[in-house]
Amino acid sequence: MTYCLGMLLDEGLLVASDSRTNAGVDHIATFAKMHIFEEAGERLIVMMNSGNLATTQSVISLLRMRTQLKDEESILTVKTLYEVAELVGETVREVVNRDSDGHLSASNVDYGCSFIVAGQIKGEEPRLFNIYPQGNFIEATKDTMYFQIGESKYGKPIIDRVIRRDTPLAVAAKCALISFDSTIKSNLSVGLPIDMLLYRTDSFAKAIPHRIDAEDPYFRRIRQDWGKGLRQVFSKLPDASWFDE
Amino acid sequence: MTYCLGMLLDEGLLVASDSRTNAGVDHIATFAKMHIFEEAGERLIVMMNSGNLATTQSVISLLRMRTQLKDEESILTVKTLYEVAELVGETVREVVNRDSDGHLSASNVDYGCSFIVAGQIKGEEPRLFNIYPQGNFIEATKDTMYFQIGESKYGKPIIDRVIRRDTPLAVAAKCALISFDSTIKSNLSVGLPIDMLLYRTDSFAKAIPHRIDAEDPYFRRIRQDWGKGLRQVFSKLPDASWFDE
Image (tube, rainbow over all chains, first blue to last red; front, side, top):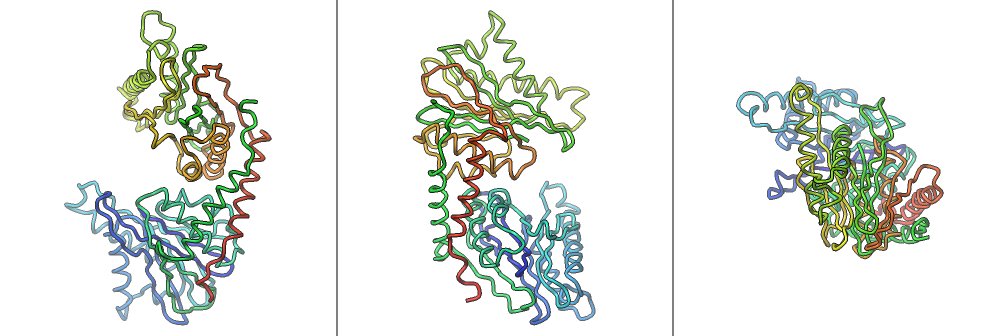
């Protein structure tokens, strides 16, 4: 499993991903799920993946190889993030078709994967896409300004409670860490470290994701204070009055 | 979907269920999912169901009809709650086999269902069972003293944070309502009213579930104060320090 989160806010973009990959509980490894494609001052594209690791790695590798080919369209040459999403979707279909054909198809393996694609290309606002295993995709809007892929349920309530379009990025980062903490607590297949990137609209600055592990002092503080705060709020609520009255 | 919750605590049992049933988003109805079988002063058995409504209704109907047959073993005559769980499991298998045979089996319908069985029979401590769609079952222990069936993820983190074996029933009721609130907020197929029953060990009192709808003043207060409290705790946490430093 996996947990990846992308938010499109007034200030810019937040993307975050865990880094645990497992094929059974006795086959666990750490793989970064955040992939960055950029041209300084012109475009930033961040892709995060969940699902079959072979498929997602191949999709990323093919997309990256094709940015090297001079005469071919690639995610570094197309003019809009919409076209980037199209290219990712096409590549997903291409890899799934390749790997699920012939002798592999009988093995009942799920080759599917999902991607979150976030970024900005000069001339456009920042945009955020969710690409389905079928290769089609949806875009975030003012009403639905975040996407989750992978194990999304445990970490959703806090986002729904506090995030609005105008939430500052530094506050959204705090919320994202709480969302990851809840997920990691409840699902063994989601694990540290977390990679997080905050991108301010129109900055086109070099993207350096922040890596957060169990020793990260800010994350430790957030986890601790949040847990303590919740228990305090809970203990202050009145007990059920209709029992033993 | 459905959300049902059973807890086995030092003080006794807590059971709670929502009451929404849906077959598609345009076919929504209210069905109580809490079924009580009792003999005053001698036994209390509460069953809650999730899954195929036709199957669960038939299971409950058959179990109830068989309590009327003089010479047959029924959930009102067996001596332990373990045997009650066995009878429920057998009946689940019986109904699924009956309904999925022949012409219905081709229709790709999921006949499966799960039950939580909670209660106390004189001579035993209170016990809590989770019966799977296959008819086998597990029992709650000191380590794992609660079961959820249906849409369990959204409402799980708060239980894990605050419930221990020695949590008083009135406090557990508060926690259960927060757990239901989180689930109802996030999943349209879980809906009010909630039926909740608190049972004090060895009381064998007449079981009268408390029905909680949107107008219930205690539930309203809990929802409101919890949401407000969470946002306050959140706003007091420091923002991400490593951004824009």
